[in-house]
Image (tube, rainbow, N blue to C red; front, side, top):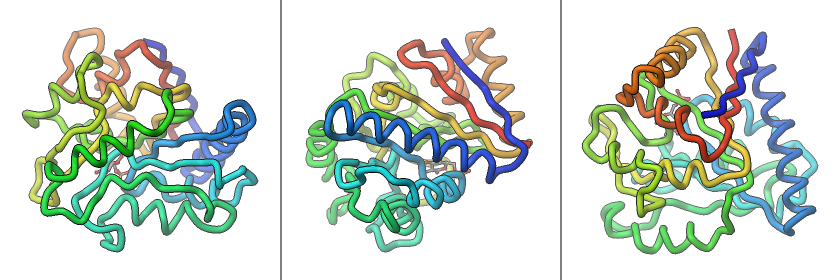
Length: 234
Ligand SMILES: O=C1O[C@H](COP(=O)(O)O)[C@@H](O)[C@H](O)[C@H]1O
């Protein structure tokens, strides 16, 4: 387990710093390997980061952006993470980047899993950067506490990179990357904005010592495949 934490004065300062770091990683990846990949979260946390990053000078046509999770809705639905990426990131200078969609026009995520897994599998590994948010219940991506499928999805030796997942509250079915895929990256960033989420982060850290993995965030912090760079703000 290697964790580095930096605290910023505001959400915008966090977003500016993270966008600058991601831009540098993507530029270096394209220069070194001719292409770059970036896994990103949904929700409210990434919006300001996307807005700053979309204005960065990067060879965007060589960059693939992958949602870490998706709700089973088309990309023009307000709840779609791909839609969020298209509205806030794949615009301005970034409008030539590719999005790897985790959605297909099929009735359920299970119907589309093999095709989406094939598309995800075509992206070179490790990813260049994975950027995650977290929920106030300690969920990361669509790995929620207390769901039957979360245990297998958190296994670092899981056979799968992608699973059909569910959220505790009523809502859209979901599909998302497993911990194995989320940690198969050169760089891993976790954004934890605000006091409430910092309390959950402290709890997840304390749970590492106790061997208590009930918060999926704990499993992310405990793994030793890739250091976790945490960005928090007051
Ligand atoms: O459901 C989700 O929620 C988390 C956290 O969202 P936020 O609005 O509190 O930032 C997000 O990281 C995840 O990707 C998303 O699908």
